[in-house]
Image (cartoon, rainbow, N blue to C red):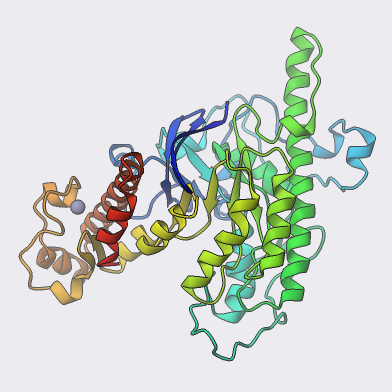
Length: 448
Ligand SMILES: [Zn+2]
């Protein structure tokens, strides 16, 4: 089902086409963030009318907000104890299968998928929960993002202490609503299978740029072991489905090697290793040996934007060229151009929609702070295809709507930024096709 074709290639630049059960996805492409299955400020009935080709939902939030429990994507009952799956002895020996699905209340025979819930008919991704290990863990303790944004040469204080989360071999314990909840690799896969997104990610530990090398290495090795557990469980689940089929139509055999992408969901692994050349190479080489449908590049990406480029240089050449690569959580215009130039195919980022809600609109002539344009009678961008332009919304008018917290403010700013990013990604694909990427990059980077 999942196939990645490279349609055009010029050095590391490429236009690809990823086949999914919900249509073919042209790359490079950006996934818009729909944390709880919805993009903030966008009514669900509007979503399919927007030019969005890909969204990413958040496993942790769908789970703790009890949304995933209302979905049903499979015929067989998720309440089956995963521990009862028939694994080959040598495959089961290294893992402890808990009963990761025991929290689910299965709704018999009801088919209601994440695509129904989101009202989005095109491809959907789900993250693994690894992002929350960072944002609720060391990211919070250190007060930093994935790129620490510090000046090079500044005295950086590394620390591996005071993680608000408990992380051990088994999984991660999160404090949530005065309770403790545990996410393990198996549970992450079980939840993601229930979500039923076209692309899912293996459970990983995303470290902070301010973790020590020693800790980053330990976390990377743990992520590798967790990946094996994700693959084993996914293989076992695929096996169970096939066994179900075989009961009607004869026996089938399976092997873990070919089941990393089931017929409905592709599992991407996530490379870790922080801003350490040797660790990134080890992680990429480890992942490259596995027959996976795609790869994520995750974790901390250094202390400056320039260091992100190094992380890509240490990772991408060691991964199979013919597979899609996703740079997790990055989406500033400049970063997209730099990463595409280094072979990245997919992105996800909250920036377009989050910044819209903070009165920032993206235009071909740079980012605009609406506060600074509060008296402007100009539209956000001339000849834009978005609903803000179609309704002749001016900067002044939009700013006024923000002042009185009118929901239309969030809506118009969000649909405009979405249109900007969709147009940007389409222009990038077109420019690669006609060998004009550098010209396009120069045009945008005058302002970004
Ligand atoms: Zn617009």
